[in-house]
Length: 107
Image (cartoon, rainbow, N blue to C red; front, side, top):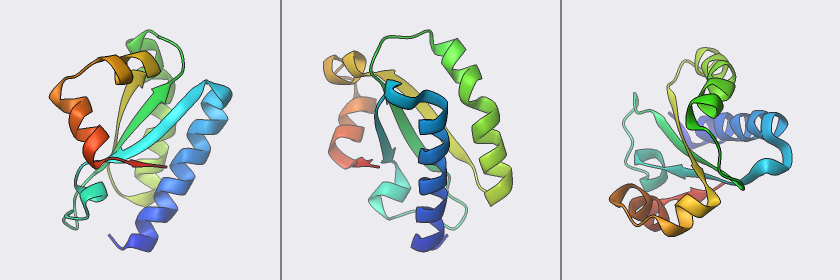
């Protein structure tokens, strides 16, 4: 995937998520191989969506599933989304969040 293609997909994904969540979004962060720039041609796009308030994970996962699935089909790529609240991202010190804090790129 070219950098231009990645940027197009990321811009569209962010726009769709902002339409879906509006002011509820605190941050959207690209992480993983695409952020490190060591992705293979078939690598997925890993995104962390940070919402300002605590939430029910299953509800929000269901809420974004159609939007993300449509984007995956449109661009013939896999977009993997994780969700966290601002509190979780700030307070939890597990390896997942540490890696995102270290390598992630805010969008």
